[in-house]
Structures are given as C-alpha cells and as structure tokens.
Length: 261
Image (cartoon, rainbow, N blue to C red; front, top):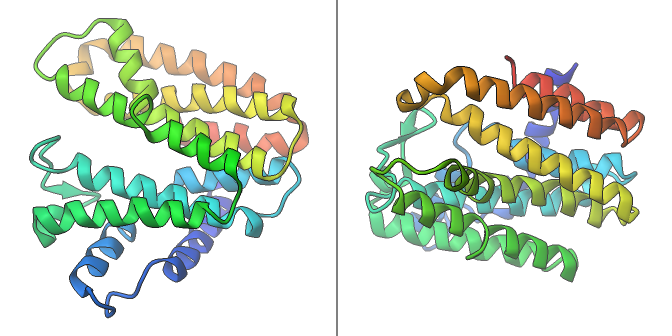
C-alpha cells in the first residue's frame, strides 16, 4: 500500500513541478535546461511527499499543499547541485547520471541552483509569512547551510559525536523537519499536532542521515551502533505518530518502508 501511495504522490509532484519550472526551450535555454535536469533526476520526492502527508494528517488536501511541496523540492535540488560542485563534495554523478556541473559546466550549475532557490521563494510567496520564515530558517546560515559548512570544515578530521549530530541535524534534518511542520501550519492545524509533527520530523531527519551515512565505508566499523540508533529513533517515531490519530498511520508505514532494518 505504501509503495503505491508514494508512487502516486511522486507522479503528482512531478506533474506540478513541470508546470512551475520554465521550459527548456525558453531563453536562457541552457539555464532552464540545467534547472530541469537537476529537478527531474529520478528522485524519490521524499521531502515534498512529507509536506503532503503532514497536510493530509491535519485535514487539508494535497492540492492546497502542492505549491509548498514543489518549493521544498526545488530547494532540495538546488542544495544537491551546489553540494556536488568541485569546491564542496566534488561528485561527478548524482542518482546514476552526471551531476549538473559535469553536464552543463560549473558556472551554469551554480546559476541553476541560484535560480531554483529564487523560484522556490517566488512559489512560497503564495503561501503565508510563517511558512516562508520556517523554510528560510531551515535552510539558512543556522540551518542546512550551517550543516554544510561544518561538514566541509570537518573533512579529513575525526569529529566528535556532538559535531556529527550537529551536521546530521542541520545538513539534512532541518529541511525534513520543516516539511512536516510547514505542512501542518499550511493546514492551519492546532499547535499540539504541529508540535508532534515537528518532533517526528527531527527524529526522521536524523535517522535518515544516519541511514545514508552507512553507505560510507568509514562507518562500517560503527555499523551496529548506527543501526541501533536508527531502531531507537524508529520506536520514537512510531510512538509519536500514534499521537496523530488514524491518519498518522501513514507515517508509521513510511518509517518502516524507508528504514528497512
């Protein structure tokens, strides 16, 4: 059931993104082609799906939350473009194909990322002020970017547990948390429900980054500890989802699907 649900949402998000993004035939064509290349790269659309789920849990319709979901995905795509650059993670491939800067050149990739971030806030302008503030804080100098710069500074070092957690929570967790929180805010949910969604988002984001880090060979010796941490976070998420009523069951299913351990 969850697999079909996620695929249905993914297709709806892709369709909406296709309307928001400028055509690759529109001038400046190279920029627009790079933007679309980065966005339509076989992503799971997890972050925008979380926006839609949170909105539905709080009694709103997916259609109303779709602009917010698309803006979040544009921001995620921008972050990946910049993250892959030689000056950062220096990745030549992303999701099985050339990264944006390898396909279009570094200058175009940087501008494509800038354009996606700008377009995202143009779309967010149609929501409301609290949502814009939440998203800005999640990705700014004390959010995602803080995690990215700390990650860069710690390259080649042996960071302590506190620093590792800081990187995980900020580089990945903050945006994921914002997906759930803003979905609830957009649906005009009660503060208590938004609080539960926010807490769930923090744990989900942390578990997601730990899970992703397991792909790193350097972490193989710490694998058992990492899996144990994910299992603990899963239990917390399942308990928190139960506070969201029957509609919160979808979060339990999603957690089991994403963290198959």
